[in-house]
Image 1 (tube, rainbow, N blue to C red):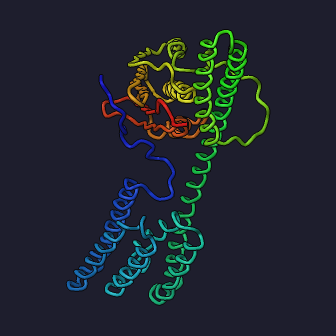
Image 2: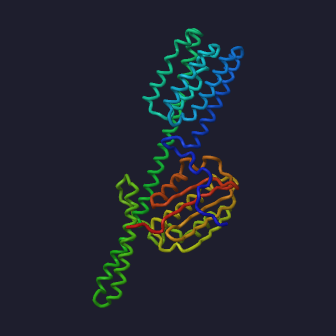
Length: 389
């Protein structure tokens, strides 16, 4: 089946970002608005049953609070202020609604603000939310104040817990990226070392035959030029990654023997040995790819195989399609398993999707992955055939 590179589903939906994604913000709004309408709306209807005009105005204020929550991820401070004012107005209209209940939307806003804004900002918001506490004392006495302050503090604490979880996940992702860059840097080091060694040998051979066999010397010089251009491209990749250690590596695998798309069938055979059916399809030629791109494509397929074996429950078939066309080589790996949500994005051994995405990015390509509507999971990479030197 002919497939183009696309974004299947919501790839990397769980990836940690500085701001909430539009999908997450929308889900947060629907959830928090439903909570406010269910709890505060019900309280207002019960408390205002005998106050027709006040009830109508209070209902409008409750709806306004739920609507304002739409922007809590984008402007949490403004939303908190608006919901606090509206909540106090609801409480003034219907004192039978407790202050804690009337300010429920503001407490939700405080929780979100605590989760996505710096602590110094959320602490100020917490202090501001504590200012109405004397009003609760005037109506409910000591227990009223206690309940209100406890609700406000719990809302702020829940946001801090969420912020801590996000920071931990972000740190794990950053560590996975750094580790993947280290592995890539070591592999590129071996590739460049091999290329430069070949250049030295060819230069010596050209010097030996320069006078007696000039045509052979010219061929050697042309090979040197090609190798030098390739090495420059690999060095650019090496500089884009970073290597924290300065240890001396041993001699790497020779370019012709190392991991590359030419050995894809060998890799597929190791997966077939587990009982998995593997289909490999090639379109176009992958000969002459930049070594780093060739290696990245191989490693992406390898990691996709590994994650299929580990995470795709019930998978018994996986297909690989490598298409070389124009300035790009496309790699698509599809399995027929049932992958649990988030398992591929989890940071673990091999770095999963994080490592594959980083490999594609460092060679100037892109990668997307996600579940397919008809079942199974797809990894799709698009890598450049050549990079400018």
